[in-house]
Image 1 (cartoon, helix red, strand yellow):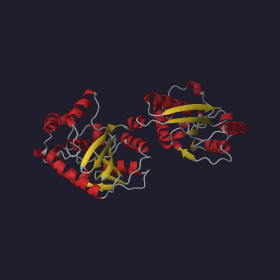
Image 2 (cartoon, one colour):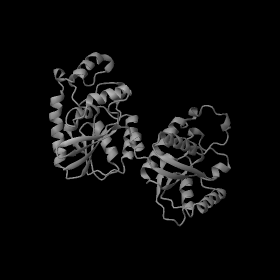
Image 3 (tube, one colour):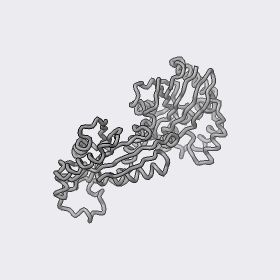
Image 4 (cartoon, one colour):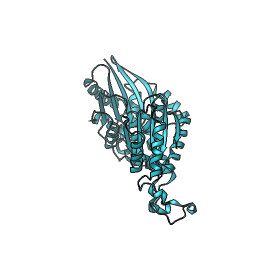
Length: 378
């Protein structure tokens, strides 16, 4: 029997953030950890899974639920997939106990503080994978969401990997052995496990199978607020006659181009724009809040302030450039993950946010994560 495994570590947690030992104790995913899980979920959204198993720790279970949102299988919780047991050193700050922690790490022996050692872990891991394999049939694909030290110890034990060589190589690269929300792969066949992918970030995973897509970006045309020089970000107003004409003209330009999908801001002016562009065409449309214009805070709808004189937009509660860049990169990654190789997609967004999307495209193309050929239609 042959079974294909993808292993994902949970996202960053509170204890990861503040540098506490975290084994079988638990702490919640932080904001970054949730974003990491969403990124990995999107990278894996087109993978097929016959089964999803996860650690009973809530940080792993929450990560698994985020990844599983694009798949029909629900995560099966298993205590045997919980993190390595560090005993009474669990939850300790590294800054307080680092010398003691490092002694135990070097020996990989934690039984003197009530935890595990390698032989005890191997017994537990074998029990976990016996259960998993008993649920599988030949050529099944399995997702496991667990922990960093758990995977390191899998390498040492049932995966029969040269862990010392791997650790030395990662140390030389100043790279974590098992990054948060990394993706690793191994195969079981006739009693033997073989590692086929060392832990990679979601973007590294994408780079190995980078797609080429073409993207036509359109900003919504003139609106009633724009005619009155009102600041229009997340707030909304209807397209003016000029804005309607612009959308109709772009629709004429695109009428002979095969569009695989349109990704559209949820603002009504954007929804009206895509309706005009695609009028009479059977093109799937996906509405995304993360394609909306910048949020201008208290300045939304204002036309009494000279906006060119504003240096500190945060004083009005406006969205920062960094926040916009994170939103743009998330939207772009997921658009690429949803798109097939060689497809042509339409993106309907807004004038200022388009600049951030264009920057995200340059970053993604430079990194080799995806090859996006973009054009802006006016």
